[in-house]
Length: 225
View 1: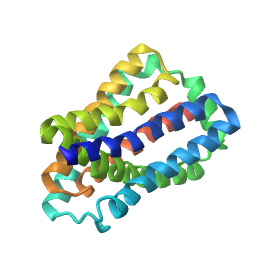
View 2 (view 1 turned 120 degrees about the horizontal axis):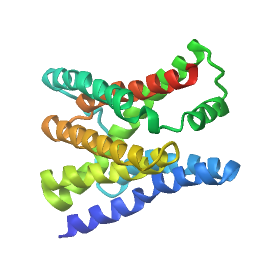
View 3 (view 1 turned 135 degrees about the horizontal axis):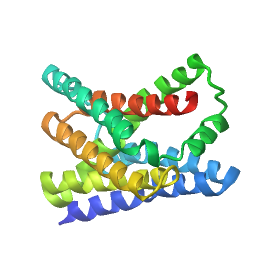
View 4 (view 1 turned 45 degrees about the horizontal axis):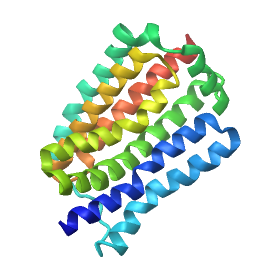
């Protein structure tokens, strides 16, 4: 019972951060960017602080077996393909392409292949690592303490999906939100499953990078079309 209460406290301290940060960045102009930065910093730092100060644990590199890496690479192919196929055959007509172009150009990209894909590679590899560390290593572990492995996977995937809904809603209608949220939830379940199976973030990280690159591929197609 004590461990469950501790897990609830940990999740309560972490889970509001991405929702607050994303909402602020989309609605509060320059102040929103400051809030987003603070929330992102908290999202990265809080799990480590919790590990060191509350759990009295040690930082590790989440070592994976070769079998785990191979299975993670195997899943990368269908994950990337599903994202591309969903957009091409189901969602393209529902996406706010002008809004996406505006956001991309707001960052400073003008259609340069090298600058866009340099940024995309940096964000994909970095964002996937951060999200696997936060949502699988930390959030899923706490959800598993609360509800066991199976329900913990569903619960962690739900929390992982929640803040993405705000982003999706900003670039499309209800159809985009529904299908996109379902896809993110299933991806979250997959990556939690891989973490549970191999006790490492790296198998899920591989297909997560591919998923992010597929999204950037779609963004590039929209930017240059």
